[in-house]
Image 1: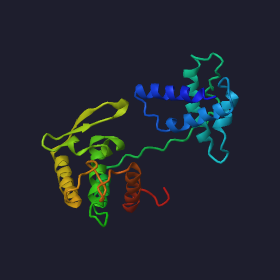
Image 2: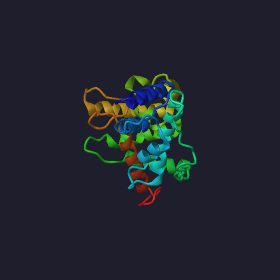
Image 3: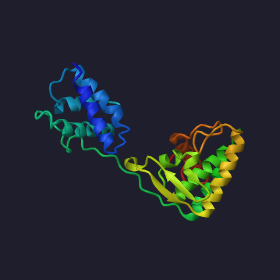
Image 4: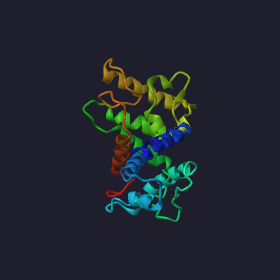
Amino acid sequence: MTRWRPAVADYLQLRQNLGFKLHAARRALPAFAAFLDQRRAAHLTLALALEWAQANPAVRPTEWARRLTFIRGFARHWSAQDPHTEVPPWELLPYRPRRARPYLYTDAEVRRFLEAAQQLPSPHGLRGPTSHAPLGLLAVTGLRVGEALRLQVADVDLVAGVLTVRDGKFGKTRLVPIHPSIQRVLARYAARRDRVLAGRPAAAFFVSGRGHRLERTQVHRTFCAVSRQVGLRGATA
């Protein structure tokens, strides 16, 4: 009996067509569907939802609540097909994580951070520029991290001073103008990148010394390391 896996696949496809990314739900809900199929469940019940959401006692309650949130969305959708569906109420597993307090960097702190990023050593000589340029671009344009990392060489028009940001929120594309000072920074970075790659094609505008597209985790690690180095983040923060 594989009733639930096709149902979940259709739900995820519908949500993606509406513009939702569903990074975590794409991993979690198929596992929940396999659990329901294994149990030969005729209907989606609160008992089954709770059993799956709390299956791992080693994780924090916030993870239980997150897993139940994925189920809740699918259950609301599936209830139109099966009136016996039990939709988990919001007061069930109501634990919510505490959000981090936002920190607003001063201009002086941004400059100090970017100067330190530019000096990061690497065997290829590209780590510093590849840390400095995209993080500086985030600071002055408000791009999301993923949007900056997805930029292709053709998306950065250094003559007109315009970025073409593709696959943004809801899958949309938009044009972002940049100041001449940013054009000069990006032009210097592009020249350095091309010298390091020595004729090899770049996988994206911002690349590693091996020519690979930067990963989000790389950028996060660099951001944390440089923040600690210049004293903007505690050693254990």
